[in-house]
Structure formats: structure tokens, C-alpha cells
Length: 452
Image (cartoon, rainbow, N blue to C red; front, side, top):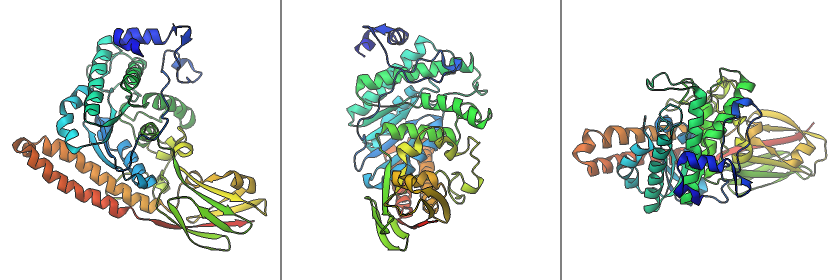
């Protein structure tokens, strides 16, 4: 990667995609379809350890896609409910239409003043100018993205640099857009590679948003039909499915291992052991009462909350790009990030019924011995209502954070007295933070496991 200092963006791309010193640069797997022949996605690194530390203050920075407050909600929901022991707090700082240069100009006032300890960035969609790739575009993106990373590092902030996502159609509102959808995605893939080089050069994290989204979009249209739009109905701003893939990319880049908990049941003696974050309240003839302080991530909730728009289980159409659960089938969200395992040992019977939250499924003794993922097998489960309450509180806080930055700090009040405006709005924001803490409560639930 030292070649980066002496080569232009295009020159480096050509070097890395040909034989260098007898070896070819490692690439991400590409689907066996001609539509992917022109793409050269360099292999993204896999985090070797957890990036987060206990008590971290996470800043989620990006453009209008971040300001949609969907993948940022998925991240905050996950950190709040799935790994509460980390005690990570989150601040959403999306700004519609922003390029990397725009955030660089405002990061001291809008981000660093709140003393983040870790930050994610997601720029490139506007930086690529909705046109075929030009070296000028790549060099500008590289300069501004690296400047952001270095500014964070100089202030003691650990960074996960996120790539842009993909596009699904030419954006009708961008009058200067040119080329084809393929041209735009090739350009975005180039910016993805440049971001990866910066992350390696600066020794910071990297979240590959582009390639999982682009390849998932291809699979989705095969599974769900051509109307399924991972990049959103306008081609740029995703719905819940695209944002789920984005959330997956960032959570993986943060090094989270996905282990929510394990319930190990001796089916012969009808005894149960639970992992950290859960406790046994009582057992009786195949019924196991558990109190959980960690939630699995819920892909849908029982009923709509006034403050939120999370998919409702009864209305959740898995063939639509408005579904979180549909995206969970496109990327390994549950296996890699959402494992609440039930393991049944020493079975006396070949088959068992498992009832959880009013829903019943049948499993063989062999399946139970190998372990089943309750979060995947029971999408509608006892955590749904509690999850919904916390998500609604997170949604309300993130909505305030957009108002705090865009309407107040950058409005008349901030222009008149920035420090007073910041202090006042932080006191108001603290009420939203307290509401999340109040909403997040242990969940009591019962597992029933009986032979049939």
C-alpha cells in the first residue's frame, strides 16, 4: 500500500488489479454473472477484535442516507439492546446532500465539540457526482476522506471509514447526472477501493457498504422480483432492507461477534443453564422461565409506535424492500450478529415442540443438539414489544439530533451564541437519552420444550 503515495487513484487501481510482484491483489468474490465482470472490488479486511470500548461515545457521520436515520437506528438499537454491557452511547450526524468536504468543514463545530471516542463515516454518494468516474473525483474524495480520518485521529477518535453504497437507477433530481447506472456503480466501487486504501494507510477500520449492497441487490431481484430495490425506490435512498445491509456492514466493521446468549437445556433432567446477560427464574416440567438483560435484534415489532416506523410483524411482506427481515436473508445478519441459541442435550425422544412467546415450532433432537437460533426461528418473539419501545425512544432522540445540529446550531440561535445554544440543546438531548435508558428493561420470558 506504500505505492499509494506515488500513484494517482486510477494508476493505483491499474497496478492493484494486475500482477504485482508475481501476485494478484485479493478481490471480493463476484457473482457468476456478466453484470459483475467490470467490477474490481478489493478484498475488505475482517476485524480481528472488537473496535468498541466500554463507555464509548459513537458519532455516526454521513450524508442524506445517514440523515434518513435508519441504519443509524439499527446500529444504536443493536448497541443499546444487544450489547448493553458495553454502555455505548450514539449520536447521529447526517446532513442531506453532504460530501466529505462538507463534513470536514463542520466536524469541529458539529461533532468534535461533543467529544466522540469513536466515529463512523459514510460519504461518497454525492462525492461521485452521479457521473462516470474521473480521476479528479477520486483524488478529491481521497484528499477529503483522509483529512477527516486524520482530524479524528488527532483528537483521539477511533475511526471506521465506511464506503458509499450503490445506486439502483439514475437519480431524477440530479440534473447534472450522466452516464448509466453501471457507470455510476463502477464509480462508487472505485471510491470504495480508495476508502479501503485510506483505511489501510491510516490504520483505521473500514466498513464495506458498497459490495454487500450491490451483490445483495442482484440476489434480491432473483429472490423477490425486479421491483425489489435495495438502493431505494428513488435509486439512492434505501428503504429498511438497504439500511439493514448498511447496519450489518458497520456492526461487523466494529468487530461485534453477534453472541447474544445461549440457553443449554438438559432434556433428560429438564434443567437449564444460561449464559451471561440472562438468568433463570424457575423451571417446571419442561417450562423454563428466564429473565434477559440482553435482547436479540428484532426484525419486526408487534405494533407500530407513533414515534417510529419500524416494520410491523403482521404487515411484514418479505418480498418487499421495506422489510428488515427480507434483508436478513440477503446477508448473514442472524448467523453473524444475532445468535440467541437454544441447545438441547441428552434427548430421550426423537422430536420436540418448542414454544416461545406464544409461537410453536417442531425440531428434531439432532437439531436441538446442534443448537437452534431462537432469533432466527422465532422472528415474532417475547422481546418484540420491549424492542419496539426502545427503538421508538432511539428514533425520537435521533430526530432531535438532526434538529439540534441543522435547525439550532446552524440556525439563528446558534449564530447568535453557539456555546449557549449547544449547552441548552445538550440538556434537552439528555432527556431523550434518559428515555432510552428508561425504555430498556429486562424481559421475562418462558421457553417450553416438550416431546411429541
